[in-house]
Amino acid sequence: MRGRIKDLGFGLQGDLTVTLTLPRHHADNLKKLMDADIEVDIKKYREKRSMSQNAYAWTLITRLPNQSTRR
Image 1 (cartoon, rainbow, N blue to C red):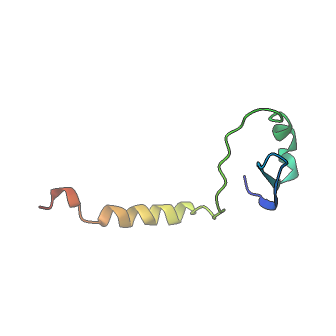
Image 2: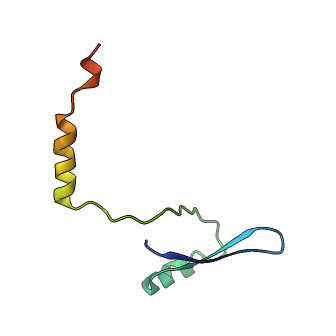
């Protein structure tokens, strides 16, 4: 899911609070997770490769010499 970090702050007990902005259509699913422990993975967004870019990458990868047969 793509979003942005809107704000960072610290609670009274020193815990970090992160405010995110996300597309509105995720609201119902996120409300179901309120007051539950969740797993969070935040990383910089990047565009996915197209099918043709991926096929070209694999073409190049298969042309690389096989290092396991070299001594």
